[in-house]
Length: 307
Image: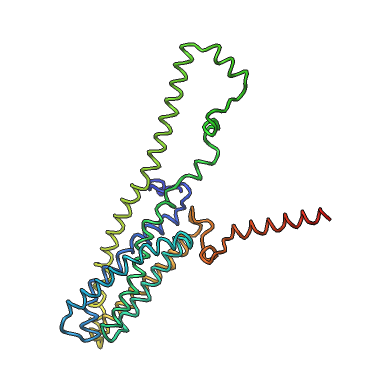
């Protein structure tokens, strides 16, 4: 990363595009659509479906169903991301949210149509919320950078002796000055390692703070931009309150689909996601396939040399 991006607690392997996509895409909108839906679901029931009684009971039941689905969907999305990858799960989550918002305004009754739409929305929202934390290790992990050969080789093999002559000479000529100098060198090396470890451990915590900030901003986005949409559409001539609510859901659903495309493009080549994808999910890893091809080639060469 370069420029102002260095001020953010991301790993060196994280590109500016990935950082911006995570903060302004995944984190910012992870709660925006949920805030919009919870605040406008009653208008769908009253203005679109036409139910005037027991509105609070219907809203509470839909919210309860949402929570039940989330309890099951969040662990499921987490397991799926281990094989499919966090990028694909985030894309699927925002895509499902966009489709579900469009289906909300197509419902003509609360049970079962609106309930099914709410369950579908809960599945997508669970994926988006789960990936907010699941992506953190990929953006803050510097393990590959640490193994790039920059560290002293003597830490790889602590008992390794460079030469027998050097060892004998050192043991025979130990002096207080050399001993003190050796302790000072080891102390500085230990302090450097502790500082690097503290910096590495502090990155996820610092980034979690930024995630909380952008998540809160996402709630403000819903309050400032999404929720006034029905009133804005209702100001137009010939637009009924039900149509204004429907148009608002279509617009917000389209924004969710746009976020899915944004995440799909911005989180490509994410660190630590190598080898994950649809092939791995379906049981055929590209690395395993390459290894199998190499084994077949080796067996063929052995059989050929035997003849």
